[in-house]
Every structure is written in structure tokens, then in C-alpha cells.
Image (cartoon, rainbow, N blue to C red; front, side, top):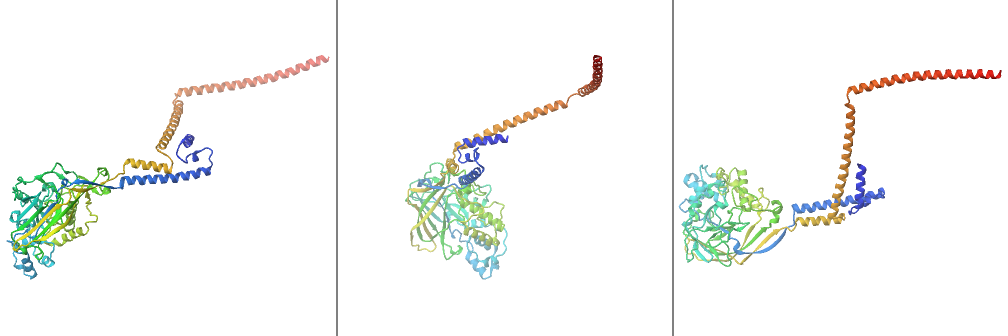
Length: 575
């Protein structure tokens, strides 16, 4: 068998097109020549294997990313959602927030009743700055429902004037704003998708959607002949990855964007109560611009709109897409999630912001044993009381300061995304002679009909990998795909020969074994007959020996008699 293998390998070395093998397997090659070419072939093969592995690893784990710039129509994307928060969203018929603070500073908190303290404590959770003196002197209050208290003390949209301009139409949009729970208490959001699209209603606490049903009323037209809002805005399906499922129109939510038209909001409060704001020195509206399928969180950028200011914001949108060719790679390699690849517990709609908000809530619960009232949670999760304000504030501060770093929840961006950049322009002030009124104008517009789309894809396909492998094989061994066929042919031929020898040896061995078994299984009578015959042969041999001895004696006697006869005859002759 070994001789067959050697002969086959020698024939392969003579016939193959792979460089260097002939110098190793040739019959007339000396030992030194074989050693030199064996080392050269070993090094060349090692470099080949290493480079093929490197190329395969690049194809599988680190494909080259190419950015392709496209142009899309502005109408294909929605307007950003606008969430407005204000310290004035608190009714004035409550004990002043700052009056209670003064009482604490003067160490007269014992004079406060429970009815005074409960709204005050709820307000503490919604304010950014908390004085340690107040926290240390707060009495231990039980059975405080922070969300309920904030809702009871907040204005309804019908308690103030809120007008919008969209598509060159003026309308009363007070009843189209959704009342949502945020880090600052209850705020109002426009152009945001419905709650059942954003939240997992089966998992998240009812605090996040139980107040929306009070806001769905018939919308009325303001100073326009168009029937702009027919009872309610028509909700259309829209996702980041697929966009609008069907062609949107004027009554669609989320609303589409238009160029050079001012979509805006006029905020008009009938009465100002500075003492109920967190900061009575700096009164202003806070607003967030975010995607329609997101909830504004502490991680969103916070914008400020001061009173008696008219501000126009120029928006510029940029779309980000990831080609389907990258779907076969893991999210860690491509750095994003396609739709449906990562599910959140409390949100149906995955975005990086929603994921980070949920991650913040989970980390807060692990650290503090509770969560802030505005964080996503289920009905069983405990809401932090006033003794845990510092704890959850520290967690939130950590997340804000480390937002760009890796978070423990793998909150990658979505593979399809929209980023809105803002430029502030036309900032002007106007007179407001009545200090009891708060006015502000906020307008948005897009400058261009088209938006830039940045598509990420990889040109590195399996054909390129095969081409690179072929080039490496030609460089290091001077072979091609046909050379690989030669190797397969050699191994198949060697296998057939070795298998044939093995089968032949196997059958020959079995044949000899069978013959031995036949001899071993003969009957006992046969062996007895053989022994009897051998005894008879032995007796005959002994008789033959006796006869031979007698014949020898007879021959000797005959010879003696012959000599005597000859002697007598000789004597008679002489006579």
C-alpha cells in the first residue's frame, strides 16, 4: 500500500501544473534538492493560507463599506415631531412652588399641610435643579401618585391658545396635540405617531397612554376655506425603513414636509404664574424636535424659545440607508439594526433614542430599585419617591455624559434613519404690553425640494472573494482552479487504489481464515481414521524393515556360497 501511495504521488508530481512539486517527487532528484523545494513549497503554501484566511475574514467580519449619495424628494419624509414643554403648563390655583421653597429655607416646613406638600413633591421630580436642603427636610409622605398629581395640576390644551400653520393653512391645533408624559412632566406633542404604534400597550404602564383619550375631539378650521382637518388627521403607516406605506396626502399623520412654507406654532398663554415654574428668573418654552416614532427623553437635545420671541428654524434633513447586501452580516459588524432585528420591551418602534431611554430606565432600576416617573416601566415597577431623586438624577447624568460611548444595552442606530439639522434665523422680538400674557412664535421651513440620501453598501461579494483567492493561488503557487481539480483527481485516484488494495487484502485474508476454519471443524471420526491408517503404515514399515533385514542375510549367505563354489571350481581346475 505504501508503495502504491508513493507511485501515485510521483505520478502527480510529474503531471501537475503546481510549481515546485516536480522538484520534490521526481525520480532523479537528490535529497538536498527535495529538502530545498519542500521548504519553499511549505512557506509559499503558508503565506497562501494566511492571505486566504485574511481575505475570508474581511469578507465575513469587516467588509469594506462604500457610501453612495442619492437624491430623494422632500415629500418622502415626514416633518419632525414637535414636543413643547413649559413651566407654565401648571395651573395657578395651587400653592406656589417658590413659596413652599421659601418656607423650607426658613425651617418652617411644619406649617405645611399634606395637600400643600403633595403637588410640591410632584413638582420636585419634574424640575432639573433640586436643593439638598429641601430634600433633607422633606417629611415622609406615603401614597403619592406623582403622575396623577402632575396631570391634575397641568393645563389642558383648551386652557390656552395654540395655533398652527401647515401647508399655508392656519388652523386651531390645540386639539391635535397629544399630551405625553416626559421628564419635565406633561408636555404636548404635534405630528407624533399614535401611542399604540410607539408603545407596547401590554407591557408599559397605563400612565403613558391613559390620558390621550381625552384629547381626541373634532378639529376646527382657523381662518381658512380648506377643510384641512376632517374630524381627525388620518393616520397612515410610516416606518423609518419603508417610509410611507402609501402615498401621503394633506390629512396624513405624520405630516409630510414642504419647501419654503412656514409650518409653525403660535403659543399664547392667557395668564402667567411665575411662582409655579422651576426657574422664575428665566421663563421660556422648551421644545424638542424628534422623529415621529420617538418619545422625547432626557437624552434628546433641548431647545429654548423665550417669551415674546418670533423664531424661524430652517430645517435640513438627511436620510441614511443601508443596502440589503449588508443584512447577512451581524448588527455588530454593520453597526446598525434592520427593522425587526432588535425588540424592546416597552416600545414597538425601535430607534436608538427609544432604546437608550429604556436602557436608562433599566439601569436606574438596578441602581436605585425604582425608576423616575417619566421612564418606561410596567405597572409593577416602583416609581422613585423624593428620597431617590438624587439617585436617579446621578444615573441620568451619567447617561448624558456618556451618550456617545458604548452603552450596556447595545443600542445601535437603525439602518434607515433621518437626521434633522437646524439653523436658527429670523429671530425677532415683538412687544407684549401685558405681562400676564406669554406669547411666542416658532416656525419651521425646508429650503430645498430634495434631500440628500446617504446609502451604505458593500461591493465585496463572494465573486470578489473567489477572484482574490484565485489571484493569491496564482501568486504563491502558480496554480488555478484547474490545479485544484488536479488535486481532487489525485486524491480520488489514490483513494481508489488504496481502497482496491484494502478490499483485495480483506478478501484474501478472509479466504485463508475460512480454510483454517474448515480444517478445524472436521469430524472426530476422520481424525480416528487418520490415526488408524498411520498405525497400519507404521506396522507395514516395520515388516518391510524385517523383510529387508532377511533379504540382506540371504544376500550375504548367497555371496558366501558363491565364493565357496568358485573356490571349489578353481581347485578342480588345478587338478
